[in-house]
Amino acid sequence: MQKLISNEENVRIDKYLSTNTEYSREFIQKLIGDNLIKVNNKKTKASYKLCLNDEITIIDDNIDTMPDIPATKIALDIVYEDDNLMIINKPSGLVVHPGNGNYTNTLVNGLMYYTKNLSNISGDVRPGIVHRIDKDTSGLLMIAKTNKVHEILAEDFKYKRIKREYIALLNGVFKNDSATIDAPIGRDKNNREKMTVTSENSKHAVTHMKVLKRYPKNTLVSCILETGRTHQIRVHMAYIGYPIHNDPVYSNDNASSFGQFLHSYKMTFIHPITKKEMEFTCPLPKYFQDYLKEISTAL
Image 1 (cartoon, rainbow, N blue to C red):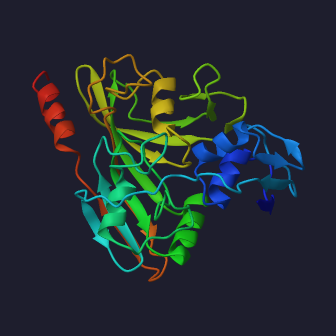
Image 2 (image 1 turned 90 degrees about the vertical axis):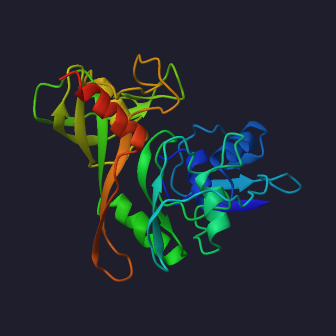
């Protein structure tokens, strides 16, 4: 049995416990469904939003935890590495960490095979993971090797000191040269797997967008995140009527297996230990580049 006192408020209990215990969010939701987690000695729901000093009891005696996460040899495209952190170029189609019944062939499985030096602040199923990008989003991802570095980087992400720039191909021809989308994002009430622009139970979200090139039926844009909400760029682009090309969730495309044409292109930050400014970029995936060449011939 574990007892915790909440030091946060207005945050879902499943999210809070996934950050403050060794359990994943999915496993916590299962425990709540089995009435093995209580708040102030009362049954709770995964959607319950904590108050300061709530007493959380986890009745985890004699229960099976998450399965062991196997180290698996996976080709890693390492853009940068030192004793403190790594920058990975994640391919489209690769899930970042285990969950939802998938405990093999994720980036984490490959990281565990590659090195034993990974932070464990995020628990056994997310070693080294400070932030994430969607399965079908490609590009730069930061990995922490030590808990000290993880804590610093998490603070840097929280206070927007790490700058990220994405490149996306949109459906439709966007007329203006730039735009800022300032629209709050929350869970879609009709489809819990989707996010949407809403005023209900939402969080502030801002995306700065700039046109790079126009095609007959598409627009190539740069997107800079001011906030980092789930599916933020995908939701914001769909909201303004220019969804990301080939997005299986937020567009009407009959999407191919490549998924959304969204690439984490640039990352700029102050190194947590050396305090030097660092900037990394990585090229678009070949499939993305080939498709741009294909639609360029129609110009």
